[in-house]
Structure formats: structure tokens, C-alpha cells
Length: 329
Image (cartoon, rainbow, N blue to C red):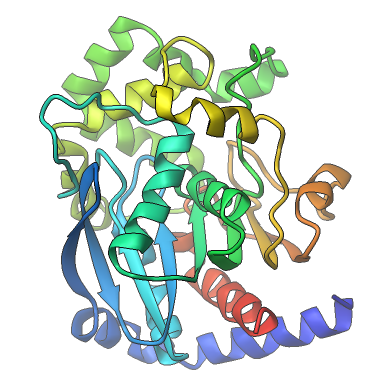
């Protein structure tokens, strides 16, 4: 897409979002409805707002559907249906089989997106997400190009290679990922189980150092971490990605495919928080990003925002979604 066109669409979308600032709360209270739907594996709880073409909004770790409270209303006003599911291990979402392994590998959460759409009889949809949710959105788009019309990937293309041994990163990156190494110890499992609310709050503060959220904001989401499967799913996610826990056999082929960094053929906008301590975006899209996103419409670094971009700068996310949806018609 030509830069001028992309810029014009972004400005138009941003203006539309800005005009909705006064009605966000009303839409959040009057339109969003809590529901649940069953797949073969899960009963997935979700928030459902509006009508029209569906947009699936996927939260990250450690967060829940409230991350999208101020993103959804502009989508609803624009004629779209906003669907925000609780990921496996979060909030009211539950495994159907009490004996099923509580696994959080990337292929599983990516498949959950497709299963969720199937359960709601959605042949096509758009996706957006960050952290775990961004990875799930990217996987759904990469492995099911016939289903995903467009995507806004917060944090970029984060699909992992879980097949080959992982190599150490730069010291700064290893330090920032301390919680991952902690979770790979039994002490970390015990610590997460005993202190999950306090630990997750520390991660909010650390990953978004310029976001001064209130206790009320955090306490609205913290109960989602009381899910009885939360600890097991989180621990498996961080152990599987570096080869310290087995995955589900049914996802082996998918993990091998994901290790090849499959392209996402749908139109995509990538967003990055300039203050995200887990990974700030660069001013321009890298050659690696463009290689896997051949229809990249825009690459944006959002000032004044950290890791929790939908909460910190919801207008930037809404504007990007409206733009990419318009550009994918």
C-alpha cells in the first residue's frame, strides 16, 4: 500500500475513534454481553459486543478481556462485532475434561481461536492480540488463511520455533525474561501458585513503566488469575517453548509448520509500545517482518505506551483495526 493512502486511512480512523471518546463507557456497559460457548476441549467465556463482521480480540499474559474495554466500542460504532474470549486458564474459561492436560503451548492457543470461531459459526473474521493473544492471532492467520481476513498484531509476528533448541539472547533480553526462567523451576511454580496476584501486578508495573494504572483497574482483572488452571497453563507455556515440557502430540505437525515461520497472507498492521520493556519496535519494519507479512499495511511504534497497548492507547488499536478492516474489503 502507498504510504499516503495508509496515512490517510489511519488519520480518518483515528478521527473516528477520537469522536467516540465520550461514548466509550456507555457502549461498554450497554452493549457488551458475557457469554460462553463449548468447543471439543474448552468452555470458553467471552464478551460479545455489536453486530456485523466479527473481530476476535485476544488478551495476553497476564491479563483478561478487560484489556479490550475501550477498544471494542469504536468497532461496534463502526458496524463490527467485537468478541473478546478468555484464553485457556483465565477467568471463567474451563477445560471440559477434568483429566485433560492443562497445556499452554502456542499451537493449542492458536487452535483455540479457530475452535472458538467454529463454535460461533464464523466462517471468516479478523483478529487482534498482544503477548499470548498476539501469538494466537498470528498462528490462526498463518495456518488458516481462508478464515482470517485481516489482523492487527501488537508486538509484531511472535510465532515461536519450539522444534529447534533455543539459543541465549543478549544479556538485556535474558534479564527482561527473568520470569520465564523462574517459571521453569519448581520454585517458580510454587511462587506463582502462592503469589499469582502480586507477581502479575509486578509484571504490569515492569513491562509498562510509564502506565500508571489504578488498583481498581488491576483488581478488576486479577480474579481471572484465580482460575484453577491458570498456574498449570502458564507453567506449561513457558516450559514448552524452550523444550522443558512436552507438547500435545496432536499439535506436533502444527509446531513443525510454525517453526518454518509461515507467512500471513492477510493484510496486517503491526503496533509496538515505545515503552515496552519486553521489546520496543523500531521506526521501520525489519526485512524479517516484511518477509512473513507480505501485505503489511503499516508498522507503528506508539509513544507513551508499554506492553499493555490496548489498555494504554486503545484509540491507536481501534484506529488500526478500522483501517485494516477497511483496507481488506
